[in-house]
Image 1 (cartoon, rainbow, N blue to C red):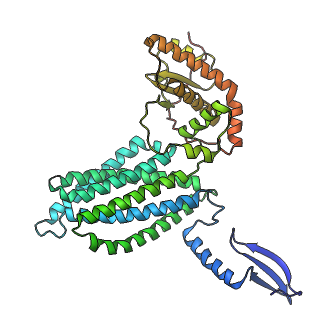
Image 2: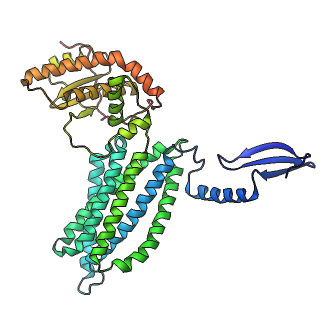
Image 3: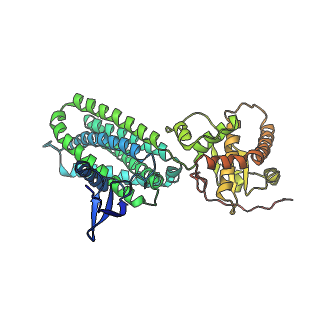
Length: 430
């Protein structure tokens, strides 16, 4: 209890945690915690937990969706840990653990083949899809976890098909290698989104601590499960499908909880289409809720960004058509059922957003294809639509971009999937 002789000299607070006060009493400076003793003791325990498992400065140092995402990510990691135990037990049984007729050499060869094919798959997947993992982090995150469940199911089933065991486990190894690339890369992309103080390393380290704690809990539960599921296929499959359902549900909730303020193709398309309908700009939360997290197979006109010039125009006449009414540092064209955009070396982020808006509008106008005109007539109408898109952007783009920024979107950078080709062209051709 403070007396009348106590003089408050200063107060301090560690982040958003408990606060302290400094008092002058009889020429001595004392430091006292605010609140009752019981409350202070509870805050101290919570503070230790936060310092061990949460980034420094939480919640101010992370995005608003951090806690919800980490909760569902923890649930899915726990389910995945239990499923992995069942798969590992089946793999060991398949290579001959507990079988007196199995040889060490045969088991070693099978294990090496599985690891080798997985390494090869990892390299090929990173080469083919590495650039997509930033722009479509949510989709690839969910894809990785679905593929991981498929791989574990294959490992559980493999011992019951001894003639195809090596083929099955090698295929599962390839799938798991893809999971490693897609899951790790998309987790890094989400870490960049969550970091609000350039604290990616701290967030990544604490995520590792959370995952380690979950795996430890999964290990303890697995010690109970293993004696129950040994030589019991029905119980093994029943538990596996239960854990898989929970795993996929938690993953879906996790990626749905992410609210990214940067524009990728899907989010920009959603925001632009809404603006064209009623001149309303969707907030990042609204657009992220509408963003598809599964890969779609409906027929649409694809968009390619940063392509070579020959993918946009095929002749000098078409180059003139591409330049008509266009004073922007990029060229658009519709070739082979695809909207293609080539960029000049001086194009800014603002120009990239505008080019993508035009491409999205063209794609929506061409999907699904309703015209059955002769190819020459169709090509002419395509160029007319390109010219119309330039006029549309001249009218709406500036107010659209200002409204997008006012709604809370980050327009200083984007997650649009631009390739590296850059083209310089003459303003007129002979």
